[in-house]
Image (cartoon, rainbow, N blue to C red):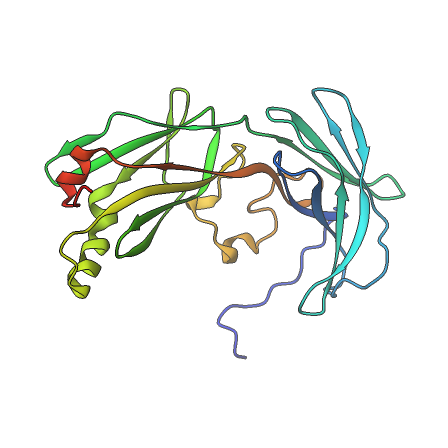
Length: 265
């Protein structure tokens, strides 16, 4: 009676598994979480499941069988984490298969993104706007884009989330210095600091494959709760992508610093 929406009957499926994980080329081992799809909603029990997990490097042909590891989390629940000790290769495609003893399986293919480095492009000063384009060379897609401004009045974090553009040679992020640093000067005024110094700027990103494109451009848990809404698993549910974290640190040139009002040491 307390629900605003009618609870509909659960739609049954012939799919056997849901899979979630990330293939990270910077790690020496890989892991995914596997859920068995049941007719009833139950917590995972501390017992084996009927599943065999294997991966195939589609570029080299190497196949690896993964190991099951039953993990108990801090809240007391259990999960099946399958893992394998290997380092994924940049720009290789991997097929991950979860197979039941009767042959029913779920599978997913993911393309590990190339190694990417950031390059500063020509900055622009146009009235109010002071912008600095940054090109992530050869990156197919970026997520979790975050800027950190290190100053003598503190560290200021600005979330860019998925804000990027497809450019020739990679993905571009346009840094809006004026908007980003407004809070820096507000803080300086509050504490009575007259000479504000910007030591450097750090951009953190996660370089991913092109499948990391959520509906509406936002990672919304309420949207993802609907099975299949954000999924790349064939004959199953879930999402297995490829990606790795990286960062870029630089000091804006004197022209930008003067325009913004920073003191130059």
